[in-house]
View 1 (tube, rainbow, N blue to C red):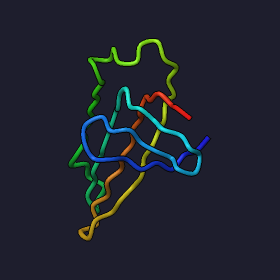
View 2 (tube, one colour):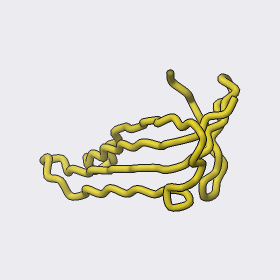
View 3 (tube, rainbow, N blue to C red):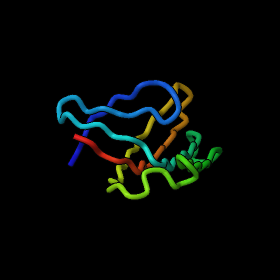
Length: 92
């Protein structure tokens, strides 16, 4: 199933899909970004993870894993690929 969400600003803010009338409460995130120059030389490769409550938040609640990603190219021809996932508690 695919959702289009918006989020409030701030740490661990919930995301909302107004069309599906669903709210997503974040539990953890993982991100990765890679940057390559126009010649294909990699100049950036970073990953990060973070978990609410040291990974102990929402222990007894069913979670859903959502994935996201994309590619962007800047005006200098550098290409950035980003991927990630979020483990969330979904409420309707």
